[in-house]
Length: 461
Image (cartoon, rainbow, N blue to C red; front, side, top):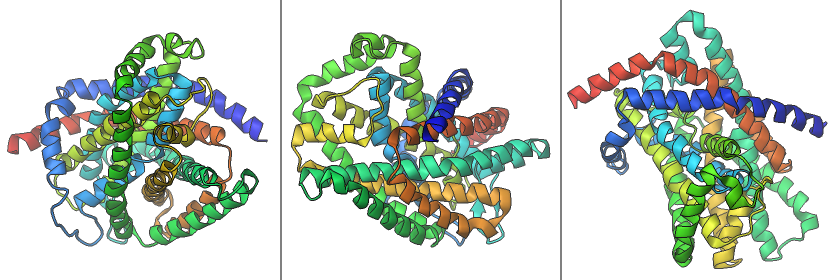
């Protein structure tokens, strides 16, 4: 049965991440960038000032919303996760070091894409029956394009519900399990024959904790996110910079392999990864998995923000992609490549490859710290995607189904703790590609409104 699912998924995945997704992701990102004069680069300094500068400002959100910083932390919680750890490792293993270059390209364009997504989400959001702000691609497609396009909004929401179980939950739990297993095995706490029981217990515990947080509502999600995200990012960055510093002599060779491998992967991987298109698709798909630019999901969190300025909130979108991919993903890739950790090119890899990069440099003791960091990364991602799934299902069925969905979503953690990694990532990649297409079509059609709002904002400020 699993073999049949894998075969079907591989066929769909190869089609989706072929011409359709590449055209939409690269095309729309390039179009938005050109039309805005590459605002993600022109206004990067301004974006950092307006985002980092407000991180430590004390603020209380009104009822039914969260603060702009809590919104960006919730969005970052879902982006700074296993895409940065297992996703980067998988991209390098399957697409070679050159995949990192294509992750950078997707991030450069994605900064503008996400900027536009957040602007539209805040501009076209609405209040639900409980008085909470709700928004995102399904709402800006419906409210921006009119009733004739509601079918596409519903298609996006349906794909969103299906996507969150794999992308937002199962793959995240799988990474948590991999990190904890590595720590337990390195200290001989358990044997390999006991891992299945340990993993099941981890899955049950995660399911319970996720349910408790999600059922507490948007404010509880925001508070947990703003606590976890800065802590986990700082811990991970310090560990990664340490690996790079201790292997500083390898850095020039690593960056040469990234640029060379982007256009000639066979020369770097010994012929295992033979085509530039493979390197490109793996880099772009895992980049999208990581920063979500093009999926539109992050804008769902931003729509809950207590703000009246769509463009000001959109600047947080630029900040997110920059932190997620340009900083954290690059750090992960460099850590793996400079450490000299063995890479089996052409085969699926996950968090264990990233962990091996740390272990090769520091020794087994670091597995304790990587386990803590990765648990924080993945857990916060599960919470962020739980919010996204809830909002997508609420769009389709109303808020009465929210709590049953949250319970069902939480229970998927048990499946993620015990399922095959390769199949999980394959399914997640497929749904990400399918989900991106209606969002990017809507984004392209609504782009004149984005340009208008940007001009109005910067004429005032």
